[in-house]
Length: 192
Ligand SMILES: Cc1cc2nc3c(=O)[nH]c(=O)nc-3n(C[C@H](O)[C@H](O)[C@H](O)COP(=O)(O)O)c2cc1C
Image (tube, rainbow, N blue to C red):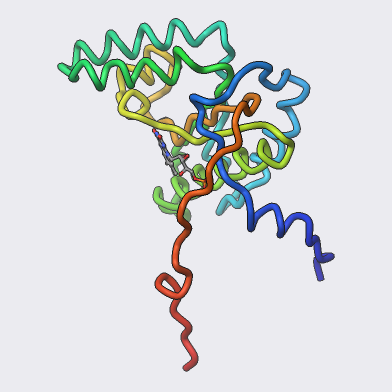
């Protein structure tokens, strides 16, 4: 039997993200980030395919990615609002971990399960960061789904895509709670 861990359960019952735009310096150092990445890599993974990897985007790289988001937005004919939004998470970014889904060829594990596993890695990293006292937020946005941005900005291969950009830095304001699901409405009990 696993030993009960009430503190861990209490964390899971009260955890909430800190909006990326409210985060400030400092961000975790490489040494501080390492256990968070290690925790995230300890995620369920059918067939031990490791269908994910990390790209740590440090502050020095944010300006280049903001400029690329703007260029891609213009090339794609995006609205000014979308272009500004596409830039802003990089303009304001301090440190973000791009969790990259890496689809592996497998007779046994369907592609969708590899996608689920990459999502699990995103949540595990977010939770590890929050549990360590960092402010953290899982973002995507149109640029993260744009092949041109992914290939030119982060060097992704054809079988790779961004599952999430997990921003991790220091909280400035207490994040407001948001409405949580009505458990009864989303839960069905099957008795027979
Ligand atoms: C896959 C995924 C992508 C998201 N992308 C964005 C985004 O681009 N912009 C945004 O404001 N929120 C985005 N969110 C929502 C934020 O992560 C939001 O802060 C989060 O839902 C708060 O939930 P929590 O407090 O339970 O952690 C995304 C969430 C998920 C799961």
